[in-house]
Length: 198
Ligand SMILES: Nc1nc2c(ncn2[C@@H]2O[C@H](COP(=O)(O)OP(=O)(O)OP(=O)(O)O)[C@@H](O)[C@H]2O)c(=O)[nH]1
Ligand SMILES: [Mg+2]
Image (cartoon, rainbow, N blue to C red; front, side):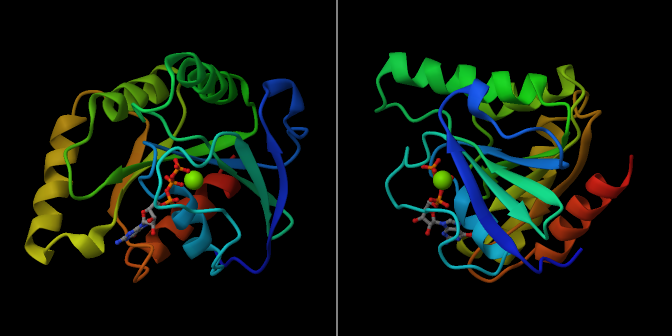
């Protein structure tokens, strides 16, 4: 798939505000500050379509983008940022899970994990959760530019091992860098397949 156009549509803070479910959707899921918004920008060849920040907890709403006038990308709030008050965190969690569970046009989740670290408990819980709700997903090991070459394969093997036995809906595990675009063709293909395979 080639991305020819990308535009911001709407930010929503509550599930009753989401746009009508007319287009196939791809959700970007992951820990706070892991690089979800950067991934959207790099896939779309845009510098600041999605707001990025070196401070965690920046994306607090669901941000919808329209791609090629035919697909939605949805940038979800990051989970697991300890400095956000519990009450707000549980509100985001409800928003994320409510969205993922009920969205009939959701075709694929992209679970973004920092390639420098083991998946966190919350990452593994999210993966379990996607399997439970029978949502196809890919795992993206991002910031691969910060990991020595020889460690990337080890990390990939480690993640595959960690999710063994529960990755029925996992389509792939792909190293990625928003800085040098490693992994971009694979992810665009994954998205293209997800929106065309009905
Ligand atoms: N080296 C490197 N840094 C990255 C990469 N992707 C993102 N970053 C950096 O990681 C930080 C967070 O990126 P964001 O894209 O804002 O992360 P996010 O997951 O959207 O964060 P929240 O919206 O807070 O949940 C920024 O400082 C980015 O420049 C990457 O592939 N390589
Ligand atoms: Mg973000």
